[in-house]
Image 1 (tube, rainbow, N blue to C red):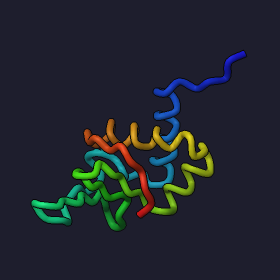
Image 2: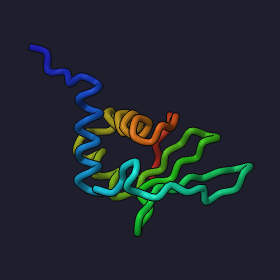
Image 3: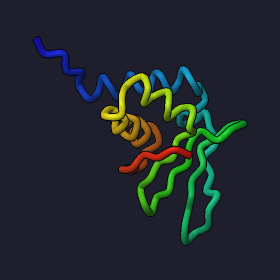
Length: 101
């Protein structure tokens, strides 16, 4: 019996957990602002607290430590790439690397 979870399903499950922890971490609900400069942008996703930062030149997504650890503890380190898929789908970005903020 094959117990493999399809990529779309795992991405959806990660999205549900993100919304559970931070319901406002979504397109149209949080503020998105470049806090860097034109030569080295760092995009912040926030309301009253910063949920994530994205560095477009390196395609690196930095998640809040609390969220990163929750996702990693629940889904495992091998599934963290699906958090990138969720972020890229939600915010139309091209993150390829995930790190802790």
